[in-house]
Amino acid sequence: MAGRGLAGLSPGMKAFLAVDVVLVVALVVVLLVTLQGRDGGPDAGATDGATATGTAGPTDAATDAAEPVSFVLPSGNIGCDMTPGGVECRVGSFTYAAPQVAGCEGTTGNVVRLDAQGFAFVCVEDEVPPVAAAGAARLEYGREATVGDWTCASGTDGVTCTGPGGVGFRLARGDWAELP
Image 1 (spheres, rainbow, N blue to C red):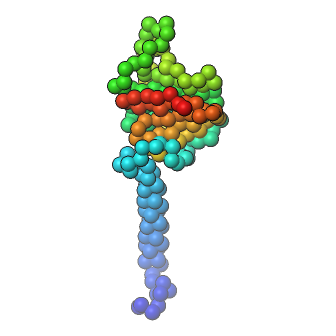
Image 2: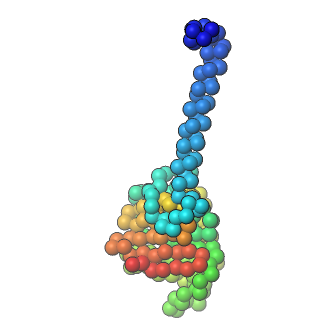
Image 3: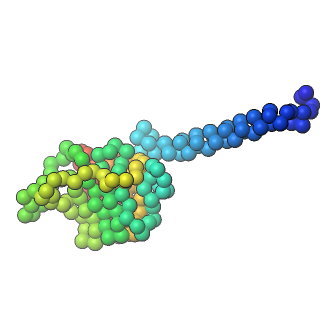
């Protein structure tokens, strides 16, 4: 039977083999996609989140978009909304000293904004908003999202967002920094 090839197989056996081949190919594709998504994961030791550009999908925010994009980092503690006009990020819990915002009688430290006027912490007079907008995509570590002139990169050390001229910020649970 070894010398007859596929010609000697019954139609049922040929169909069974065809289904097996399709399943093996599908498994290989799923495996490759899964492994690519883990390249910048939290155990990869990456400290610079701006190493790769993400693509639209269930685990990355859209890139190079003119439309608004909302994303949340894998930790679930930081979420951002990006529009052509700028970026607003929220941190759920933080350990840094909340910065003072002139004239603010509300809460500071949870919300930052980057726009044409620069970087600033936002005074929240009412309830602190949720970290992520409903339906926000997950921006995996090592990926970035771009809307207009604004780019945010997800890293194990927080989120780094920049605009024209490199002006921006890095925000993490433990600290924050204004850039450049």
